[in-house]
Image (tube, one colour):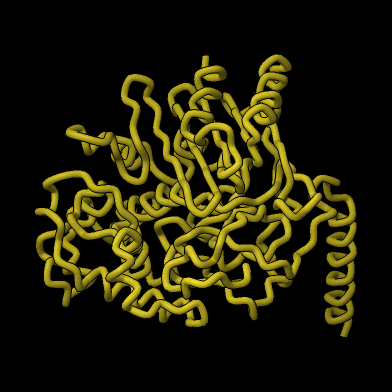
Length: 410
């Protein structure tokens, strides 16, 4: 009886402490609550169902989330703030060196119909910048001894007619010859991808389409950036790990790195800290041509190739991990950031390469979201920028990003 009473008292004490911690949370984040607002993300589909209740999620904004140290350069900070305003950049840009933020600026509101201002912890869909995480997942499974980049696709898709001709590495380096399902919509739409269907149903139909197509060229013969490659890599991660893609990413990357504001779209698409990308739903694949409400979701199409949501702080943590080797070994990072496409686009695994600087980067563009990651691991330099309204920018995000990089990396 005494033990039972002691246990009850302990539980009550823990609950009391937890409530105290929540009430003392940073004011920049404490005012946000999980909302019911319908928020469209990228063109290759949001995986959240309107019926899903995210109010019980325990991952987002834990009180243990640490904030990176700051060593703000006042001149760069002033320049960056003016840069965002002059370019009508609705989003956030952040630069850090050796683990300290040297400048970070925000501008605009979370949507064109909202007066709520973007803050430093506002979430954004990062679009194709998600691909580097998928590639890292393959490298981690290689470290675990569960696969090789030289494995044939027949190992994972036994009935695929080209399975013995294509390797995992061909997918990673965009040299598979497989058509991009997003660029073949006249054919892909015939597979009846429905906004009301489950993620599993739409993923299965997408995989069926990809694996039924003839190759565009001999595997390894040339570089051809496309989303089908990374869609299949997510399937391979699930097959090799035994976990869902989302669970694998959470358990092996996000949680160990303290990226508590990062997850797949299905988890975060209804958080009111997510900036809205105002898009005409008729542009979404599989949706009727007539305009429909912005509550439309087409689930299951962005897994592996562009389906993550994150914040500037979390992305800084991720880019830093490529230097500190907290998750991936130095050998794995080197392989991932090696130029495997010297004949054309300089592409590694989910990252583009700038050999003279030792830099790796990627850009994402879906709906009106635009994202950009850039890091020079040897110099401890990280840059991240993201917008939810690139249609209103005075310049493209590529030019915008490199203007900032060239100013701040010196």
